[in-house]
Image 1 (cartoon, rainbow, N blue to C red):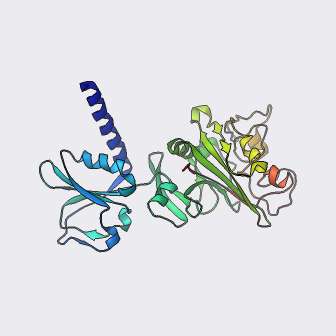
Image 2: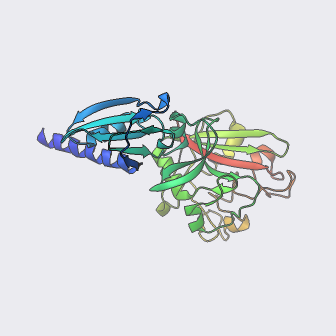
Image 3: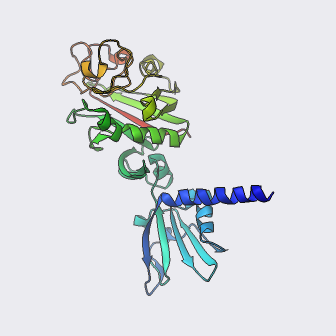
Length: 320
């Protein structure tokens, strides 16, 4: 029993340390008067604990939806006041006469931000690959984190393995978020959904959603697990699931199944090529819908081999 107790204590301690890594210390101050300037900024809960301040962190982790911001105030030698706020520190406006520590968490996905009350589409910061990273969040669609966008072709997608690993582009336009970020997010979210959404030149919009999407690590060449279709666009969805099990290929790292040539050189962009592809979201958009064979953003099951999409994007989120 003693061994079990020790293991539980160690596990709790480790989980609290992990939780602290996703929080930033924004404030340690003393002011004359305490006043909540906005009623919505009242703590969602507050309580006193005896022992270590780590108890505040442990309870915060268990109640994370109400603990977006954590304030810890030392009352005595072993007494601590813990306050949870369900708003970001940037939205928390108050003055305190008490010397306190205020920590505000960095979300790990757009869905988590949506659950915190951030409802507008746009650019936010999330914690991924050990650092804060700007991402575009589709909040009106349900908290999707965008991982790729082909909008106007301003960014060259014919890049090296290292570039695709780290990510490139502008999250307000054409971009690739990075294979390491995609890998971490797909594993972190667990049983994640992927949505691939396109728009044709005549304004038609279609999308597919698959569950169970994730990619493996660099040693496995970011092998793709495409997932299983869950919406009713089966007629175009198989162009995506066809790529399941394939490894990522760039112009300088050939892992496709086409013997004697590199698909990423033939179609100048990286992708999870097989021999070579059915759907390719990384191709540069054409100037018009009617094109030559396999030119532009190609989704053959939707438009055929001689037409290009105008735009396409990829996004992921945790399955509800």
